[in-house]
Length: 71
Image 1: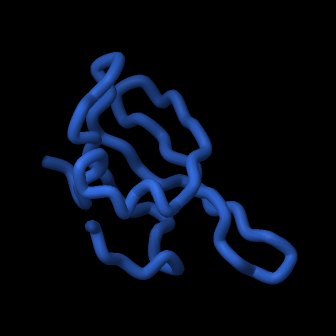
Image 2: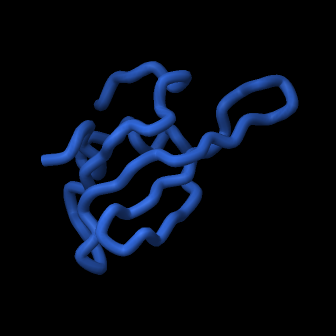
């Protein structure tokens, strides 16, 4: 399990352990909070294609899917 502070996710770098569509390296470019300020989702942008998608930030904790930093 990846351990990190959710408040410091903006502009963090991530590597997909099982790349799809030649997209391996990602950057967190935006955060989505609810009215109470609780983090809900992050926007990941692929470095290679610039494609972005919103995912639940808790999915980044899964070390079988995501690795912190670019490797």
